[in-house]
Length: 202
Image 1 (cartoon, rainbow, N blue to C red):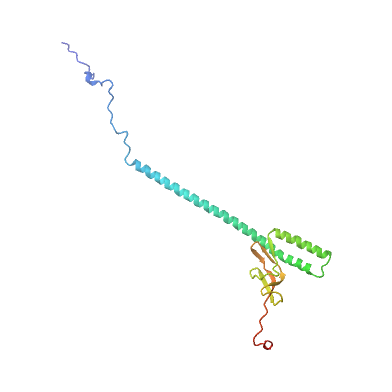
Image 2 (image 1 turned 120 degrees about the horizontal axis):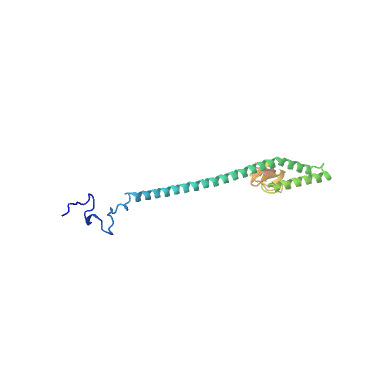
């Protein structure tokens, strides 16, 4: 019988070796487990982003509307400023038209002088009408206090009460803006005789 002992730490038998084809055991179900509450947190974050996107879109639409209104206001102010400047210039030229018309009506103006004045008046009037000036000569029409200024009222035979019988100065307008009312004489109806008038008693 031999007295030799097996080496210390050596395998003592087949039970110490793993069987072929058998993998080492691993904990099951740990790798697939997600932290508790992660799905609701993602949904809340998505909803928050949607709300923020809607708010930004609403702000953008408001800013765009405000900018459009600003552009329209600037264009309107610019147009009004141009109209005001043109109205001032045309109003300043109205007395020149009056003087030319008076010169044409003067008895002393004759021949070449009258023809020259008439040409200047016509050319100036055509140029101003091209800028939008409108002339109002209400002679023979009804008196309109919105467009006419009555300098005198007289009873004129053959004219109905309230009829413009003479024009001392034509009216001028720029579009719908009145630059100067027409200066006119208006017919007034004859007063009915008083019943106590001695001439009416006979």
